[in-house]
Structure formats: C-alpha cells, structure tokens
Image (cartoon, rainbow, N blue to C red; front, top):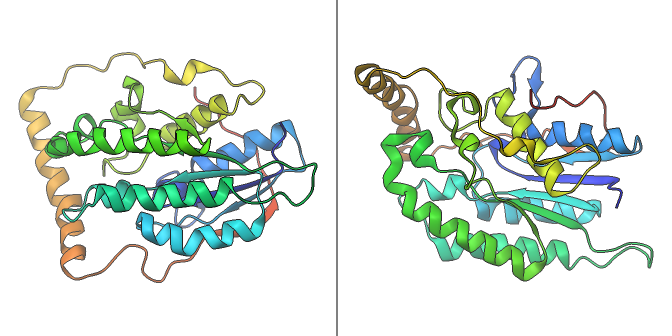
Amino acid sequence: MPFLRYVALGDSQTEGLNDGDPLTGYRGWADRLADLLAEADGQVQYANLAVRGKLAAHIRAEQLPAALELRPDLVTVMAGMNDLIRPSFDADAVTGHLEAMFAALRGTPPASELEAAPTVVTFTFPDIGRIAPMVKRLRPRLLDFNDRVRAAAARHGVLVVDAYPHDVTCDPRMWSSDRIHATPRGHALIAAAVADTLALPGSDRSWTQPLAPLPLVPAWRRAATEAAWLGTFVGPWMVRRLRGRSSADGRTAKRPLLLPVRGQATRVD
C-alpha cells in the first residue's frame, strides 16, 4: 500500500545524530526512509518527532499525542535503548510504554472508510556486547527486552525490524566512535532494513549481508581503544546522570509537522 503520511517517533538514533553535523543538520535513517517513500510517491509527507536522550516514557507522553494528531498512515517507533543502559532499567515498565504506543497507534480510527489503521514498525536492538565489549554484561537484559518487543508487536500487528540476528548490525563500520549512534552507512542500513520490512519497491534482503572482514587488530590496540571510549564517552555520560542532566534538555523535534519530502535517498553501498 502507498504511504503518504509518515511520522517517526524515537530518540537520538531516529533524530539522526552522527549522520551529518550540527551545522548542516542531521539526516539519519528516518530521513533516508522518507526519501525512499517519496521515490515511490512524490506526494509523501514526513514528520520526525524524535528527540535525543528521551526515554520510552517521554516518547509516549510527549511524542505519541502529537503523532496521533497528525493521523499518519505509517509510524516508526524506536525506543528503549536509553532506558536499557541505565541501572534503574525496569523491563516491565519500558515494555508497557512501548505496548501502550503500539495499541494507541494501531487503534487509531480511520478518517474514512477508505483508510486502514496505520502501519507501525518497531525494532529489536543489535548485540551491544559486540558493539561495546565493556558493556557485554547487559546482553541478557537486551535479549529479554528484544523478546518482549517481539511479543508486544505481535499482539498489536506491528512490524518488527529484527536487527539482533544479523552480524552486519554489529559491524564497527556501522557505528560511530561513541558506540551509541550509527554512522551514515549505519543509518543507510537501518533505512534499507525498514524498506525491506515494508516491501517497498526496489527493497530486498541485501542489508542483512555481512561486510568484507576487517584486518585483525592487536589485543593491545583493542584495550587502548576501550580505555579511550570509557574516558571520552562513558565518563561524561555518567557525570550527566549524576547531575540530573540529559542531552534532551531544551531540545524539541526537528520536524514536528508533516511536510513534503525533499532530497534523494542514499542507499547502502
């Protein structure tokens, strides 16, 4: 079916961090997906309500009502990773917020008999223990959460981009040096995965294929890289938590209204 009104909900990944820069603007996988939708129909409109640093509860409280007012026919919901990495993570509560969003979006009454309930797409998360070995202790928590996401999505007819089973989603070339945000290539991969899940024209399963192997890295260099990551990214993140601050402070959605899509899609090379 054609999708003419696409709304993206989420945090920094959906906002598009590290695909572009603060001066030129962040693009990200949701923008790239909107471009792919526009290739199929030039009338597509797109809103991106995502804000970096948001927890699932914030996305439900702040972004969901705005999304419902826009009456989309396609919605993507990427949420939960900011919750999962916190010591206070409550799997039941976070899954509850996700399921409430699924229920509200899928239960939206159509504007006319010619419309159906919105198509909703959500995501499992890749193996963070392989992306950032220093946090591999979180793997059991991640596996449980992914299972919960799949089950909640099945109960509400929500499509799932299942990232975890595919090695390519953990490839370091897909992730920025902070190990949190995708590179431009990673954002392109996510867009291709959603397009495949939606069976958009020209999409296929090529996004699941692994990249060519990287050269082996000596153990001492890997250890140095991990130490640098702890000092550069984990340390400042912990300081913000202790001070009660968030990267979301003072920020609003970059594209709060449904507007015509501009630009060309960038596909995975």
